[in-house]
Length: 467
Image (cartoon, rainbow, N blue to C red; front, side):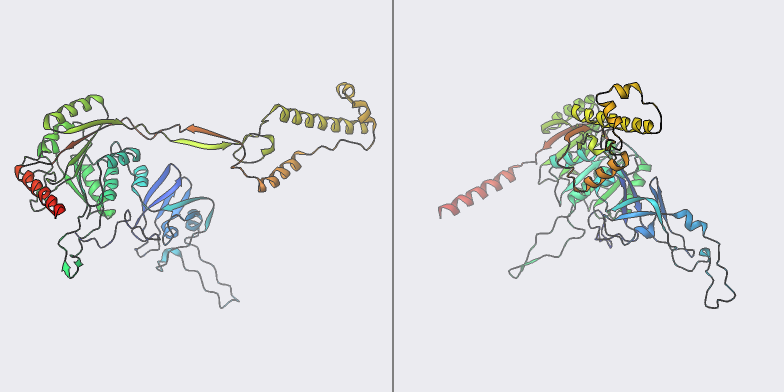
C-alpha cells in the first residue's frame, strides 16, 4: 500500500505542518495531542486549544521547529475587538477604516501574547502518545511494552499479531518497531544481475472484539498515517482465530502479543498444523501474554505446555521513577526560589540570633535618643550601657532589604550543581498497574525434508573445506 504522506511517528520533519499530529507539552506529566489545522472557512476563525496554562491558537503552532516554546495568546482580547471599527477623522483623508474581523477577508486574526503561560510543541512518539492518549481501556505503558518488544525480539521487517488493541498504546509502539519502509523497492542490481531478494515490510495485525474501540483504532491509524503498517480487524479471536479473510495476504507472524482476559482460549488458534496458520513456518514464534491476575497466568501456562510451547518464563514489571535533585538549605539562600532558607547548622542559627539582637540594640538606642527610657533587659545586657552611652556609635546592622539584594547578586556567580546535598525521592503517583508477562517459544516445524536438506548442506560444506 502506497502512503502519500509519511506518518509523523516515522518522519515528523523539521517543522510542524498543517493537518499533522503534534503533542502540546504543558509540563512533564501533562501532554495534550492536537491535530494542527488552519482555517478553511470563509470566516477568519482560528482553531484554538485551551489549556490550564493558556490558550494556543493553531496559527501560532504551525511552521514552528519541533521543540519550540510557544507563548500563550490572549484570545479574549482578540474576541473583544470583534465588531468594532475605528472612526475616520474629518481632517485625515489618508486613514482607512479598519474592517471588522467578522467580514471574512480571508486572513487569520493576529493574537497578542498573554502575560503568562507557555507550552512546548513536540513531535509525536509512542512514548508521548501513551501518556496523552484518550483512555478507552487499561493502557500498556512504556516500561511494559519496551520490555515486551525486546523479549519478543521484534525488529524492522517482522510481522506481529496483537490481540486486544484497547487504547492503541502498544499498537503505536509495535508499528515503530517493525517499520521498514512503506513500499517494497524494485529489485536491486548487483554485478549486472538483478537481486531477487525482496525487502521485508513490517506489519502489525491488530485484533479488537469491542466494535466502538475498533472504530476508534481505525480512525487513529488513518489519522496518524499508519495504514501501511497496521491492519486492524474486528473479530472475536477466541472463536475465529487470527487468519485474515483475504487468503492472498496471509499473516505469517513472527511474534504474538495477547492482551486478553482469557489468553488460553486463543492459544489453540496459534498452531502450525492448521491449514490457515497465522504463524511464519520458517521462523520460531515468540509469544507474550499480558495478565493482571496470577490465576490467569497459571491457566495460560497449563495450556502452553499442552500445545507444545517451550522456554516459558513469567516476569512482573514494577516500574518506579525516582526524582534526584539537590537540596539547598542555608540562610544564605534567603529570597531565592526552590530553596529551604533555614539555618543549616547551629553556628548559622546563632549568627542570625546575634544579628537580631544587634537590631534590638539599635532600636533601643534610637528610643533613648528620643527621650525614652531603655528597657532593663537592654541595659543589663553585656556591654549594653556602654554602647548606648556612646553617641553616634550605633552598631552597623544590615537591613533585610540590603541582605536580599546582596544574596541575589551573589546568586549570579553561584554554582548550584555543586552546592547543597544530593537527595532522591520516589514519585508519589505511579502511572502503572500490576501486570504479569508470560513469554514462550514455539519452535518451527522440522520435517524429514528439512533434515535431509540440512544434512546435504553440512556435507557440501565439509567437502569444500577438504578441497
